[in-house]
Amino acid sequence: QGKKNLPRLNRVTRQCPCLICGREKYCMLSQMGDFALCTKEESDERIDSLDGWKHFIPASKRHLPSDIKRHTKSSNTDNPLQDFSALHQSLVAAFSPTIREQVAATLGIHVSALDAFPLGWNRQCGALAIPAMKGLGQIVGIRYRRLVTTGKQLKWWCEYGSRWYPLLPTLTVETNQPLFVSEGPSDCLAATHLGLSSCGRWAKDLNQETAQVILDHATRVNASSIVVCGDNDASGGGEKAALQVAQLLQELSPASIIKTIQPPVGIKDIREWVQCGTTTRLVIESTKEFLQ
Image (cartoon, rainbow, N blue to C red; front, side, top):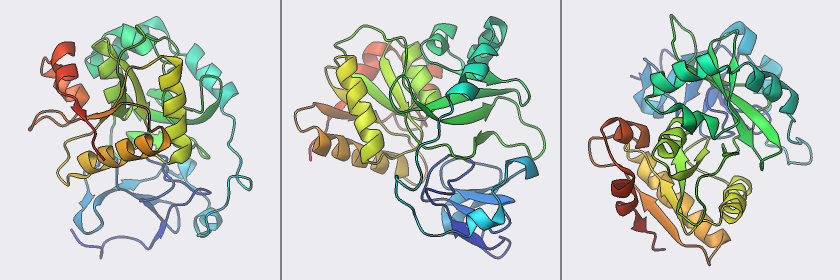
């Protein structure tokens, strides 16, 4: 599909991130804020020429047009991280045991995998609330995943001002084992379901700030190695991004043992691999040493 049916688009920025995946680059927003072209989250309408998917943005979730027209990326000093802790606490309180069981069943994982993370629930939208975390005590964004969608409802979206920091567990499994850095929260939960130590990056890639959060967590859990997980997507971007993340982590921490892993051919990601019946041992044996 070509570009002719698209409204005029502007690149997302740190000041005006993508409302679908929360990233500060790669995606685009229409000038009126009613559509997003997200290069991470899929929809029913793929735009091949732009390597992404078109998403309708409800009026209540849109950026103001004046925000979208600001093309210049500002520094961290000009745009300090927003604190979402109060909102996050209310969402965690709404995540009842009954809803946890329903979410776990929908994702095909054990409820204990949910319990390992500070997840919440948006009652109004019927969506899982996933925090972006700069360490265990600082919530710098909230991303929602609606489990059931109808019409033009968004499956994924973020609170305005969210930054794409990782999802970290607050309950850790046995230390001194590999730390799996999964692409996305669903894969992170699936890896935890297998008993693996896992954290989730919000997007395919990391920058130095978010990579350092991963390294700090690896130190916290005394990880024996760090395993970067890639997706098997049609473009091959998932594997390429995993290698780039591994390279960045190695550059920032030369003494760390960095590995990568891809699901078998025909299996999209870690969660699908779990649903196909993989075992913890098979996943660990499939990791490969990263060589720069």
